Image (cartoon, rainbow, N blue to C red; front, top):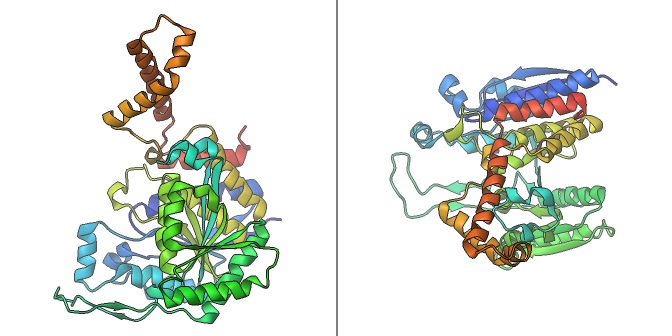
Length: 422
């Protein structure tokens, strides 16, 4: 069935506009294939909006965000480099508080969905050893977004003129109702996926952690089919880097802990560019879709940013906002196909130093020298080492040849959607 959907576009800063360009390519491909129509409305949001309009979240943008006129909101990252951030601070602008925190509160978008996925075949994206990745990582991290320390009252320890006071304070507050509704959302998602749920907290130290743990335990009684496990957040941080696949399934976090651990997960799989996200209210359906990373001003305009996170966010929007499950699957399949054919953006190609290459060769020499000697007993150690180095050099060249730009990656995704990879 053909549909028409209205989408509010907030380009954001840095790499935001160029990533949004690839997201729009994906929407056009879906529209062409299925006969849908996507009406796009653009509004300023972020640091660029401040310098152009005197407000990083202009009143008209805010009105449209909260109006309910749009079926979906697609948002780019916000932020500037150090010089730009200093200009904002000098103007009394706290960018993240006045944009990201504000829009979450306006929409009551209390649940953030961030998939952390790395198949075994793409283990080389990760800085971790392949044996640590094992058979692959498939975690859906759910983060509570409108409670906790980010939304609590604050006492500033730095004055507007740069003076440093004796005390600063951030209050971390959670109500039972906030935790309950988030817990229900987590258990419903675990039911939907047929997965276990890991509840992460800091109950050994914080009162909010003990509250969080108790409410989750109570809510668990409504979902007897879901196996719930618990983990202290510091233990989680350690095990995420030593045995990440042990958390395959759903993992639930409070706001600040989730902010930190989802970024750590991006490091585990190799790039925050591999992490799309949906920030929504599961009851009302209101929310927005965005890459989980920052604006990367240092590479803005260079056409090298990874658009996977934006295109994946489009897939989230198609499925969650528009009820287009088949279309969303086409997008996810296209993203997987691009990687399966060996294409990647430059940050996923791990460039090794001379010392790292030597260590790689040395390790392979220990493992493979016997096999080389069995195949050709006349080979000496230096010759074996040379063959190993040549093999790695060929592999590195093949990988480098598969590196694509931001726009090329988006083109490949759109092409696969339209021709089914033929």
